[in-house]
Image: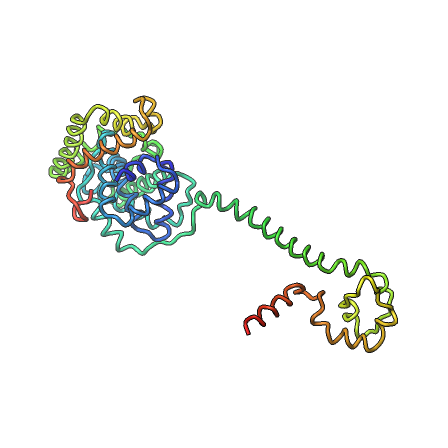
Length: 183
Length: 199
């Protein structure tokens, strides 16, 4: 009961007030206190006591009204709007940058070490993706002749799917591991 | 949470379909609205009808309430318009727009109003309620009476009351609650319980 008294004086913090309002909604005894405390205040301020049964009659009318459903008000959205407008896009951008960066870092050393030799290879027109999918050993750079030889091209083309330069680099091995554990 | 924020909370709950929340607002503002409407309409029955209509209009208009103004200002505006429309429909002259607006309505003098508004039965019950409140208030211990008077009549915050009464805020909270409970206890036989006689 004391929480109702404190609530109507505006002296509860936000969490306490929301809890008190929620209890008011479901507890008839608390609602009677809410009614009588407001009546006392109005009478003390020199106002009228009102009309007996006004609340009951209004409740009966209200029960006949279709329930309104409205979007959240502007004032209520205050802090939420700031979060929506600035924080969430910022977090999303940071996440996107992190993902792209992670993918680039994963592929960058491969390209740095061998970009020169591989780039100058006159690759066959039919297998350009195979060349970019190769991950050469840095200590033993692939010779242009070896890379461009037909068996190697066929091999690389056949194994392109498990190349670490695919879009899900790093994830595919993990998926395979999980699958095997499931079996 | 301030008074206005509490209203906003209740409005938002009502906007999400919680009719009980709107009933709490009605319980809070019905006497203020009736007092305001009595400036326009003198007959007690008509005042109540218009007040009920104004609350229903406010409920229907809840989706349009964005919280740009205080709920009571918005409600009073609806009440004034409802009263004017009612008078026009009844072929009576409505007061001019400058005679009263929602902001002025908050500062209404109360004692001169409604002297002849109530029916004899309602007037008697209202007088009984007022007498019970005042008599119980007079009988309260001084610390309780002072605390609730500073809150209800002077509008001081708990912190200000604590400073005036030189006691902790928790004591102020307790004294005001005990004072209200003491008065409400005396009112209960008059107000009745349950939904049949809710004021």
